[in-house]
Every structure is written in C-alpha cells, then in structure tokens.
Amino acid sequence: MALLNEGDKAPAFSGVNQNEETITLAQFTGKKLILYFYPKDNTPGCTAESCNLRDNYKDLLGKGYEVVGVSPDSISSHQKFIAKQNLQFNLIADTDKEILKAYGAWGLKKMYGKEYEGVIRTTYIIDESGIILKIFKKVNTKEHTEQILKEMEA
Image (cartoon, rainbow, N blue to C red; front, side, top):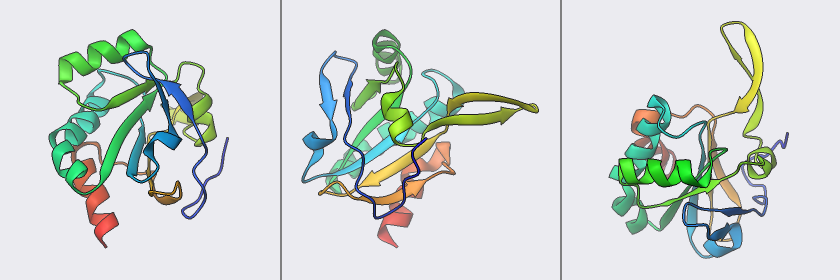
C-alpha cells in the first residue's frame, strides 16, 4: 500500500470511466483535481458523498476544480449510479484496484471486530502540476464539498 503525503507528486494513473473512455492524471494538468476514492456505488455513505459533490459541482468548476471518483465497481455499475443520481463527473471503474493501491486507498479495514481488505474512503486534492495539496482520510460524506473548500481556502 502506497504511503503518500501532502507535497508528494501524485501517482500517474490511467483508468476507464463509465463511457469506456480512458481517464489519466495527465488530462488534468492545468486544473485542480478532487480525486475521491469510495467503496461502492449506491450505498448510503457513497451516495451522500457523490451527491454532495454533484450538488456543488458548478461551484467547484468555478473555483478551478475537476472531480473524479474511483471505486472497484464495474463500468455498468457506474453507469447505473450516474443515471440514478444524475452525476456530471467521471467515475473510474478500478476493478483491478491498481489506482486504489497506488493511492493507498485499498487496505485492511475492521468492522465488528473482523479484519478484511477493502476501500479506505480517501480524497486527494491535486494541484495543476500534479502535486498532492491535501489528503482527506476522515471524509464527511454529507458535507464533503464544504470540508474540502474550508481546508483549501484556509
């Protein structure tokens, strides 16, 4: 599992979105990127987080941010999630978990005293030149945009 810190160069990535198009980190050169890793489409926390980013998407674009979500769900799962929630940004289907692992968003978790491997909900703010500005490990799913903007404007 990667151990990334603020100030590090973000790992290059290439993944396939809901439209079967390749999305890479390099495509966001010159823009700030909100790269958020979430466990599963259509689950309560992930839906709240994605919808909060959706509801504030125009404001985020106006501040120079682009948004990309990453989960291990399939392309067809992302297509259904986007249609159901009216999401306007790309979701990458990281079914082989390469991007999740590169960003340290896949690892051991605990629930009800049992350990298992899964997605560690994490958000990275990456600047125009590919440097990690901020890492959110404790994501407030219902107010994630506010959480991001408060930290980035501080």
